[in-house]
Structure formats: C-alpha cells, structure tokens
Image (cartoon, rainbow, N blue to C red; front, side, top):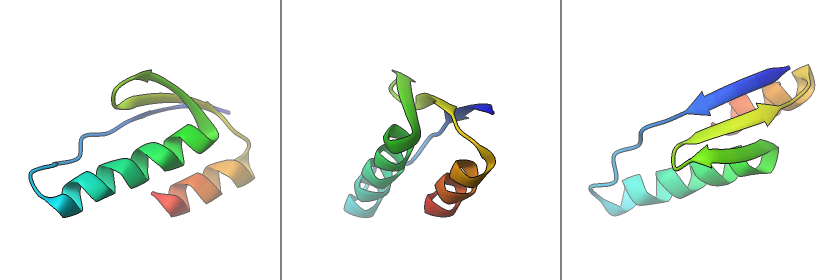
Length: 55
C-alpha cells in the first residue's frame, strides 16, 4: 500500500525537538522524504502496523 505521511510538531522546547527527530526517523525507516515534513511510504500491512506503533 502507498501512504503519505505529513506532520507538524511544535519545536518550541527540547521535548518538541526530540519528538520531531523521533517522528522523522521513524518515517525515514519506511519511506522517502519529499518535503521537510512529508514522507511517501510503500509498505505492506505489517510494516504499516509497525510504523503506526512507532508514531
């Protein structure tokens, strides 16, 4: 399945910056970055479940 992930994480504090890096890393493990906060992912049902759990 093809999924598009777009996110917006507040980075006004250290916790927000850490959360932004964690989300970006999880998305990069399963897809390709097309913009700063947008990823295209081609995953099967099992991979989608794993990615969703990480997010």
